[in-house]
Length: 302
Image 1 (tube, helix red, strand yellow):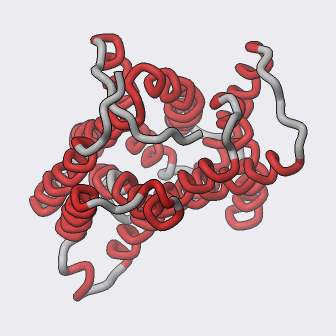
Image 2 (tube, helix red, strand yellow):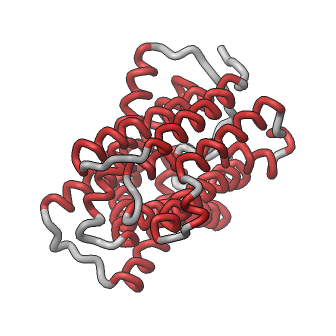
Image 3 (cartoon, rainbow, N blue to C red):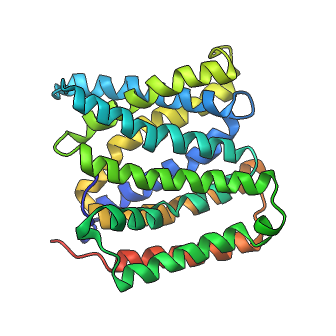
């Protein structure tokens, strides 16, 4: 499911779909926060992976894509579901109970920073070059600025919420390593459906045990939020992601990370009346600079 970073010249269509993907994922933070008003964070995630799994398997069957049979592959799906869905989705959903959606999206942008570090630790061909080291350093400075020194001096539930989101980004980074080591050669749509199956097998029982039986007697607002983040921001977004990846290359997809946060910040301000501290914006600016440094070092591919 992962591809070595490459950078291509973007066509107008690639730009349009890259922006669409950024808007979709940026709005997912708001929809998740709305659902959390009625259901718990684990139940929120169970709905997300469960419905998205059904949709993607439907797509796989309609397209006639081959379904893996080997136990090793299904074990890889289970591990990928844990690292790329169960852990980060749950930590970030819980974190959103205690911090703003905009701040969650800013901290989420650190995924690319931790991804570079994880790749350097596990793969010999992903060494930490001076340019990458500068980008990573700026990224850490940006995260530290967004979080604020007071989170270290006066540790509270808000500080824990921020750490939970950062923990989710680390899990995303490890998922990239897992995918490269265990899921090569699979059609990306099948890999995504298998991953969501693995996460559903973990998440649905976990939510049931911790938060009680899944209730379907929810308000229209909650179902609308679930429909958005499960159908649009997960199932459809995965399919769109691989389409954009083919057109734009993995290096340019880092630009999506930069565009998600502004969307989430604006929607949080308009719908939820959120107001982020100025340090959050400064932190995002520093983090974005670090991501641009990383992106500028990718090799171009025609």
